[in-house]
Length: 165
Image (cartoon, rainbow, N blue to C red):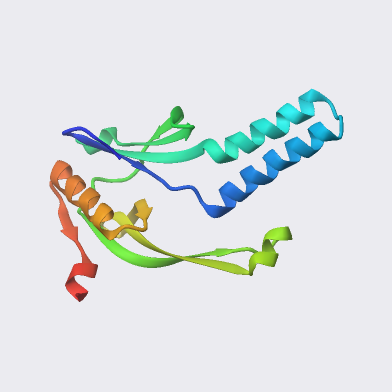
């Protein structure tokens, strides 16, 4: 998380599948190298594996909100960015959820048909629209980020977790 007085950069965490695919491609590159295939094919597998390991998305929330953007990065170097197409938010919400993923394909299905992860999520809301801007495992970290966003955008913070305690 990078902070300035008028912006915050939120890293989106890598998924288990993203790490798994990166490892599989790097392992394949070693096997292809041992088999004596062309160096081009080895390099291809290495680059694909590193791309999976290094790729992540960041969301930069700024004041003024119209300058906020979604950044696509490889090893934290911004490759492409696009404007965050979302109206000015009315409030930010912090809540707990269980994210489920389907593993219905190939070798990953041996690990089970679904995977569940408890996460703390930050969402911006405007009328009946919402956008997820962060998910993580630490409630305190998510709450700190939500307070900072609340302050720079001058919006309300809705925290149903604190209300239920």
